[in-house]
Image (cartoon, one colour):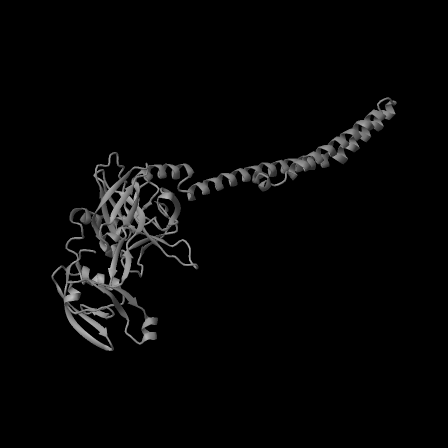
Length: 422
């Protein structure tokens, strides 16, 4: 049933109006009948008739006036109710329009504009068989896939580092790119920034590429409508579009190799969406989709690197293959939280999970499983604290590091070296 009919009040004013009219007709009929009954009588009878008529007029005139007033009041109520209904419908339509920033047509148009700028990336590692004594083992033979965004007509494409990270781990790795129209091209690795999970690859001799239009992520507001466009689960679902809002801004994720500031969205982001586009309602890329929180108890927690944050990194990757002049300690680590600290009886800080060969940390004697508690005199509780100290220095600066190892504290000097991001 159409809801329009359910919301209108019953027209009780109309029924009352009809009842009043019937009563008036009865009164008039009674008067006419009496007049007819005495119309053929003598002059004395006529005087009686006139007397009766006067009596009728005196008796019913006030009632007729009251009935007329009642009819007028009912008509005014009917008119007011109609005006109220019209106003309510207009107001609800206006309200809906104000909270619906984009419509179905706009979403379709945005999708059609942005999709040609999104590519599918497939990274393949060939299998190789090795012998160790009497044993044979095979490595490689794996593939990974993700999404990418076309930067320019020269063929440069930005994606997540983890999408193409096999390139740094294996030999003879191939990278293939499939455009939205189905054309396929081999790609070369240009550069990567593992710390912020960004990388740039390039295809050559590709004609009619459609670069994405990039926006300003700092203009985003919480609650703004955004679209995530990418290739969840690979080429089979290439060009998938999901709709959501900006759930939060400037999020810091306690996870290795993520940007310091992230956009949180409830637009569905799935494996394969990595490296795809987070788009505003103008069809502009405002973020690079990176990860989601996967847990049976949560839903709708996806994250993207803000384009304002990513832009200078991308420029450096295109020009140098790494982020130039960025100081780094040369370690990767994980947070030792307060609860872990209490449980294991160790200090809070950052436990070292990897040390880059010939880095400042390596030359300073930092080892895996060391817990860094202070850096340059600043208390350390997360990788963000280490990155903040690094960003306040330049390449070549020497800082002090306090570490906890096997129940004892050590202090050493560390020379910050240029971070090549891989």
